[in-house]
Amino acid sequence: MPDENAHQKTGQMNDEFIREYYPDFERTDKPQQVDLSYEPQRMMTFEEIRQLDEKYLLQNYARMPVAFAYGSGEFLYDTEGREYIDFLSGIAVTALGHAQADLINAIHHQADLVWHTSNLFYNQQQAMLARALVEINFPGRVFLCNSGTEANEAALKLMRVHGQARKATKYKIISLIDSFHGRTFGAMTLTGQEKIHGGFGPLLPGVVYVPANDISALEAAVDEDVCGIIIEPIQGEGGVLPMETAFLQKARELCDRYDALLCFDEVQTGMGRTGAYFAYQNYGVLPDILTMAKGLGGGFPIGAMLVAEKFAPELASGMHGSTFGGNHLGSAVAYEVIRFIEAHDTLNQVKKSAAYFRAGLQKLQAQFPDIVREVRGMGLLVGLVLRDDIEARPLVGKALEERLVIGRAGHNVLRFAPPLIVREQTIDRALERLARLLATL
Ligand SMILES: Cc1ncc(COP(=O)(O)O)c(C=O)c1O
Image (cartoon, rainbow, N blue to C red):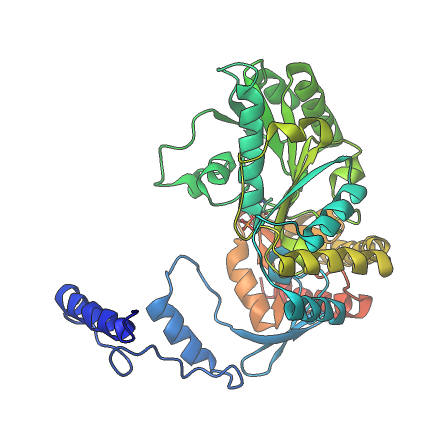
């Protein structure tokens, strides 16, 4: 017979342990009870949220002093109801804006049917999403997961298994300096930034970093022992830095010559952000592996790796997996994101708004020649490079005070990733706020 009071006993036992180990700890509410007094209908004040965060969450993020309560299209509203223009999209995630009606319908519909059944079973939503991703890209196979870092872990395992099937010493992977591929151990090692590695060593063996766009350094680094090259066609976190076509072509050529796999990490650049579904399509250089996440679910966590057909059998049954990866909810929403992009000609819209935004930023550059060095990026992933001695971080905070949500990439680059549905009138308003901000420098 199950003991009906088991949970209470566990609670008592916990309390005894807790008293022993944390003599100063006081529960905020009645003992042995979880405080569930939060009601979703009641919006907490910013101060209430901040206090809970600082007491209960791992303090691994440097947060800005705002909590958003809801959003609509290109706008976010904080707990006090103040409106912000969202030119960050949750770091290139909410690609179709907030509270997009078709996505809400898709998630409601799927939520009524089934959320999760695991990868032990076939799954209609996964199958439909995979077909769409292949049709958008190239003949291949899709592995679904939950985040960008996981997509890159899958890519890393595939590159390694590809190398190991050929010879024991073929495990070297080439990555780029200032790249960013994620925070799990493999993806962190692929990331070419010492500040991300700091304190976690030893890292995975065999990863070699070369400078972006340096063709001779790339050529010098690649040999028979290389099993893969991983590149962001536009470095996102590293400063919104586009690769040159010749550099990507050289990477393709070297992979072909040395039987290595070319992986493009399009976690940030994918799903229409650059005016093509994926940035590599603007370059005309095909990868063997394509990783994606962020915009894929329009805000719902989902990631994917697409592998060219001829290499797909190398990750065979039982060699990789994920419990949540591609669950019904996530796959249904991602499918709807693609359906929306097709139905609304979003890629062309992105090209138009990107040209409009860039022209506006170039005007700002002309207006503030001592402050703005360069406007760079592709489509609606744009970096405003500031003078080398100007730190971007405090400016992001000041922009927030101007009710403009933007990001930072590298120490002196302001990063913009507005939703793909951004309208010219909203771009105008954002540019006005940005001009006010630059004028304070
Ligand atoms: C290019 C790139 N790859 C991988 C990642 C990691 O994605 P996630 O945070 O979903 O693990 C990011 C996140 O910023 C990214 O920009």
